[in-house]
Amino acid sequence: MTDATQEAGHRTHTVDLAIPASHEYLDLARMVVTTTAALDPMFPDARVSDLRLAVSEACTNAIEAHRRLQRREPVHIRCALSDDRIEVTITDHGGGFSPDERTELPDAADPARLEHERGLGVELIRAVADEAEFRRVDGGTVVRLVVHSRDR
Amino acid sequence: MFEVEVTEQHGWTVVVPVGDLDLSSAPALRRHLIAAVAGTDGRVVVDLAGVHLVDSQGLGTLVGGLKRARTHGGDLRLASPPAGVMALLQLTGLDRAFVVTADVAAAVAHPVGSPGDGGDD
Image (tube, rainbow over all chains, first blue to last red; front, top):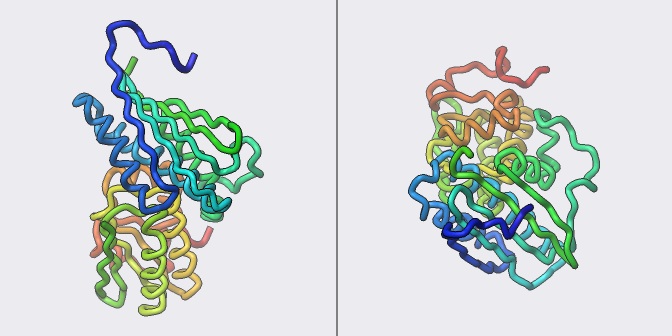
């Protein structure tokens, strides 16, 4: 029930971006996604902030995964803005990662937790996005996140 | 663009980053925090007024600075966080780990080791 549920007559803006897997492109990735969201003038600022954080975390994980494996492929980011939401898909080739395989983390309020930044990043994505899905694909990870622009 | 300005106020080093605290700015911020801790016996205020986004990498860098400051007998405090940054501190529970104040003046006025610095529980 994730895709192919576009109702007839509703317009979807789709933007595709491929960035080199380097931290220098993180800001560009956030800008493209938030600028796409802003095509909807009714997208609330607070939700754009949530989106910016979620995209930052997902792209950081992707960039770090590529760096660890010294992969040269780009990270792909697709955003689809529709009537009441933006859906962002971040696809990497960083070897594959499943958040459920992580070891136990310290409590969220424990500063020691910050030593598990990737884990914290995933939790932040889950906290600020309305939907978050982490899928292992051949040699990489697909993160799909959805942020709603209005109450439904 | 990420920039950092450093000043001193009443024996505290005030670090003023402007930009996003993320993977890309973390190394520069970390260097500034290490130098700041060494300069004023661990008394550091990070003025967040010019910061739009802090993500987990930025939080990790700030927490690293906090630990280092407390190891040196001081503290690392956060001043003037914008609403979105404050919301993130609350979401992660880090508003209890840091002394967070409305402005730099309040941060340097709060004595080190007093109740509410979140450091002794």
